[in-house]
Length: 298
Image (tube, rainbow, N blue to C red; front, side):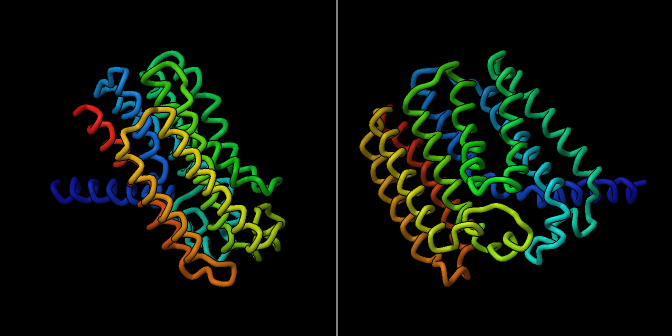
């Protein structure tokens, strides 16, 4: 009896790990700090209940899980052809399309329910937001601007968090949203440089496959320059404490470092740029927003 229960717990743990790996749950760290930053910013003039924060976190987990799960289903045949992605869960046979579909349905339900718990407006907006998130998986079939679309879809996270708390929109949160959009699009372009030849052979659209690595990296650097500009705009429109500017400088230096270590003729360090540097940027932003909020209370 005890062995049976232990095996069941082990199986559940394994399934959770497999699904988490399928959707690259660790990559949540890119957008989540932006959403939490919006919550901290909203907290200055609005009460933030613990339950609201919990529902925001669950909504983010549900939305991202649904989007990534759907992407894995739609791209399963393509992933099976690409040496870099053929070990993913569906192409390798670890999960079936049916398993992934049930996961997407459950994640979508979690997102919609969590949004409903945050209010009527959030519930209504959850449906177009879910559509935007899922539709990204189709964009690589017809437009090289898929990276910008991905940035747009993910950038809805801080805007949604702000609306959940305030039922309004402000210039500062729009600046934060645009910062996330250009930030995501910029490093997604860099990441896509790994698949230039594969995308061309399979008639898939991406900036690197259509414009080449060199031009695409220039566009990526311009997008990250816009990221920095939008964060500066947020700094002034929100009325951040001056200490936040120190974090902006650190973020700017990290963005520069990212484009220094990834070159058109050398993509060996792209994983360092993609995960290590970008995750550090996101965390630094949240810490900066939290610290300046604390300084403002002194």
